[in-house]
Figure 1 (cartoon, each protein chain N blue to C red):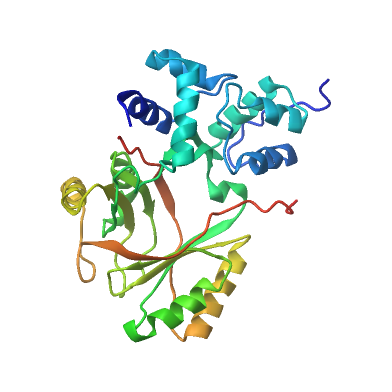
Figure 2 (figure 1 turned 30 degrees about the vertical axis):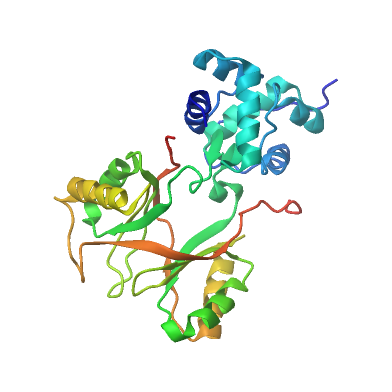
Length: 180
Length: 147
């Protein structure tokens, strides 16, 4: 017997409902890899499996869930090199070019961020991943090629790449269970 | 990893279908059995080849506030400042990077005001300026690592 139903809200940036928060809390550590992975959620949330699937679709649609997927460990998959590439792109075209760079398969994150002059003149950040130093250097060259007409040098240099030399802290971001 | 492991990993990285039996759907796409998909994925997870399996959430849409911050830390003070920064539970990730700005960390809080107060506290305790680079526009988050 169902004692609650899930109603799609279809609005981007709609605040999460309490049942959606429950769904997220129950899946933060992942989904069970079993034939019917949503059955236990349906049982816990007292919804039908169809309603759980509708909620998943809705959260995907709204961008709350980016994707439901296998996430390989970068290092184990052989992708041991990464670089934070940063670019000084003309402000009037940064969104257009950011979208272009974000579509490259080796880019994992691509953001526009504010400059902080005079110390920092870069407004576009693209994190790249590869299997060796040569590969990330080639990827960086590809990005440079795409941006060649819109790069500028308001201070210092037009671009840079910051490789990470040490992880100082790494904790997962978790939704707080006690928040309303 | 055998050829089927690789095909399953490459396929499931891109996102599984939203359905009652998603692994059966993947199996029919890859022309293998549902049990093979399940057993192989579970093995990859147990083995640490997968860091997780399931929904990837956009942290910001869960209601928090985030920023990327950087500092220029003198080499002789690096360990001391690392301790100061890492002691904040709001600091989620922190990396040493090769640049004049050599420390980069993510601050995650419930609200914008809390972010500003954490940054002020870090500046006060370290006597160093913190450069704040909040996200203005997100173009892409995700990664496909073909194996």
